[in-house]
Image (cartoon, rainbow, N blue to C red; front, side):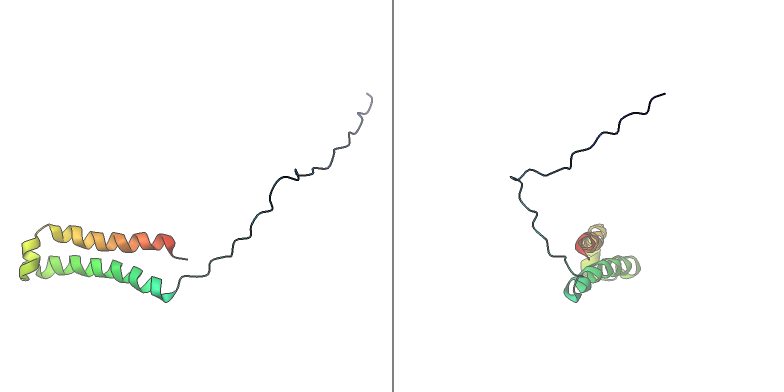
Length: 88
């Protein structure tokens, strides 16, 4: 069987009208001013729920809120959780 001929490939040259990419500066790690509120919100929400379970009926303004205490505690924890998406 005869051997096939080897074809030469032309070298790829990008079109001249394309722009050169802009170098983006790498973002460094998050500072302490981001971490403290992030973890603080999560812990504050947890403490809110714990106080509601333990002494919610003894604290007058917490008893007035009723089941809205759950919304407040979970909202604080979710706000801290959403902050983790920007944490580096």
